[in-house]
Length: 483
Ligand code: PLP
Image (tube, rainbow, N blue to C red; front, side):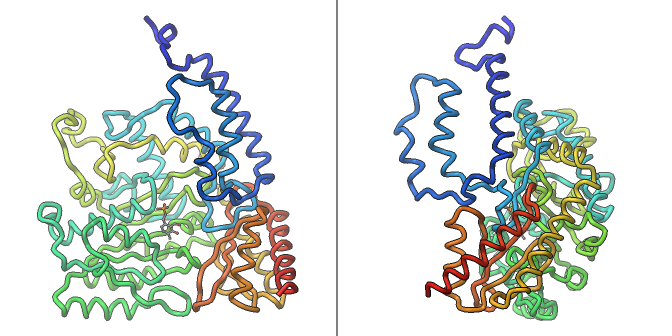
């Protein structure tokens, strides 16, 4: 019996075709109308679950019914990250080619844990990541033709964890994976580093007490002399410094750690240097922002997220190492049931050894689709547009005496506040987000509450940014006159 006749309870391919077309229509309409929804979902905790039946259906239901329930019960609980009025956190933007690449990956249903389990899944990934090295001006040592190479991880958090684990193994001569960490290994970051490093230290058995958060200067970048002194202190206390994380574009303000100076300290004390450029890394494809990557050629590892600002839907983090063998030796386990001649030959890459889980999706497809659709010129065009829109927003903030810029604006991020009071700024953010017309987030700088405005959504234009600023000014005026 062929697949054509054997459906059982499965969705027959002809029905899949019909629903698939309808779903693509739905998504195209969604993309056209996404600015009509409240950006931040307006439902209360528990509202979504209250609409759902207590137990799963015993008898299967029609696709139309499921979609109708999705629209009625689930959609109101969605926060619309793809709205052009989404300015919160860092973006997680997407695009037509990315969604189609993701769909193709789902349709193929490939589990690409090893070269053997889908040759193209591995080889396309290696190839596209070599392209990314060129696109972002990253060092040649991250290319697959060298001792290093790149891999797609689900997130920057996973990339950082892998880097930390490989650093732990390098410094213990691959003993910690047998014996467990010895309690004396010390990792370094700054007070501005993303919290994913704390989580990595918990998971890797380094312990939070052995994570040093080095102070920053006025620019919120690492104070390198404090870093150096702390290492000396830790060494004289009998501890073993082994890992440092530098950030290109911190989460709060896009501060840039001085990677070359940090690299010098790491080289002197033989620390693994990991560079986290989660969002800002994308900007380095533009020649005028290439200097963001100064010093990265001296790093042991580097990551950035196309799933933030490169029109590639979540999840997609590109992680590069200078010495792939260190990573592989750290993470490899080879049970009998995975043995195969290709692996034994040593001629192929098995990406299962480059990440935490065994299984892996065919993520390279969507990244390949995106790069081929836009071309590097197209990508640069849109990144430049976002940076220019953020600059325009800065000029409007500066033109209003009631507001001030709270940290040097960088790339596509503006931190600002109303000059009046902490309370007004908090109320302002709450009122703006409650309006559903735009979504911003906040940070604290010099112990003062600030608003963050990040331009990175695929379809955000000057009209959206201008409307957002009018809404911010108008709401602030209303709040002031009401107080
Ligand atoms: N690093 C930085 C600088 C970030 O801003 C973020 C998230 O915003 C992360 C790491 C974590 O990213 P992911 O969600 O991919 O783990």
